[in-house]
Length: 122
Image (cartoon, rainbow, N blue to C red; front, top):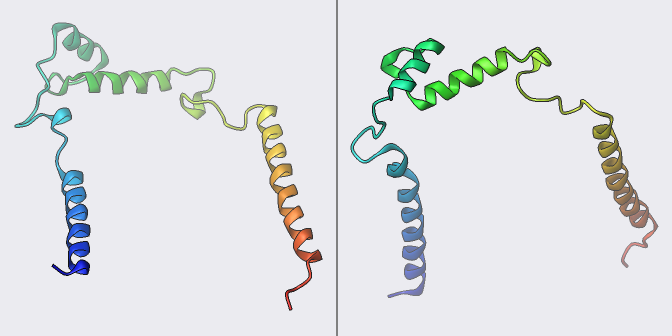
């Protein structure tokens, strides 16, 4: 065969195999022929009832999601920000930003002044 044809065919083979692998369903997570989620236990059903989740959709994921929502709603220390902390909450953040600005600004200034002092090529 011709060398460009072999290269083109091998590139297409790699592309199509990568594409095929990317679009295949995740059987390990979702199961082969349908749902692998077992029936909820009595403890899970009781917790779903306590949390106000319908018995038809009672799963571990639903319970975990409802717990997260309740944890955010019950957060009294920082109620308007969710369960996370503010990124700019402390002085150390501004110190880090200042140090980074000084470093990058110094490097940029060094390149600028070094470039202005150079003689152009003849």
